[in-house]
Length: 234
Image 1 (cartoon, rainbow, N blue to C red):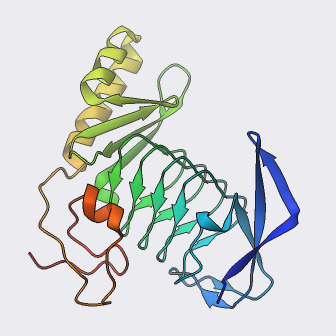
Image 2: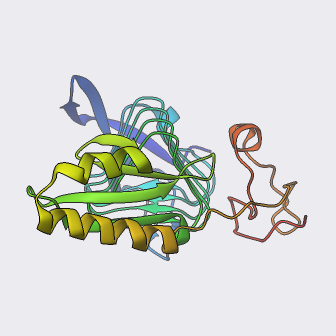
């Protein structure tokens, strides 16, 4: 059974792409308890491939999902958030506010991406310990986001560009002293906050019984089920 439909009369043109506001075809609750009733309007997607018809995944508010991006499991994308490219949002993850997730980024588990955070490149965010957003930073008061990559390194998103940590340190070397000091303090906080520890082997979930997505299995080592969050036995 389909969970939603595209409403052609509510479409918008977004960067040259036609996005359609979705309408719920069944009543259900999102993972955080929000009630969705039959006929309720959600956010915008480019096609039905952007949002799973299964489980509790939902796009709401003025959030937009397009390209090859996918939202599935119990994930929620809301507010003015945008997800595009090959990005995946799944499990119990939430992307909200003015957050942006793009590129090949994966956000799953119980991870939360909010505010003005921008996650791109090969980010692999499973929990709140894998991401840190600090705003404002720099002369133009922009948002600075640190996150764990799939190779378990710290990546940086700033002013729509992606940097390895050492490349970002080189970038700020020529900043005015005030902004440079603040950015360097943010880097030290990120080094403490972001969990880069090795992860255990994975298998089928012993709690919910669901198989893990093939892309996650082939590209990432995960310690918790991306659907229900249960710790995976090594």
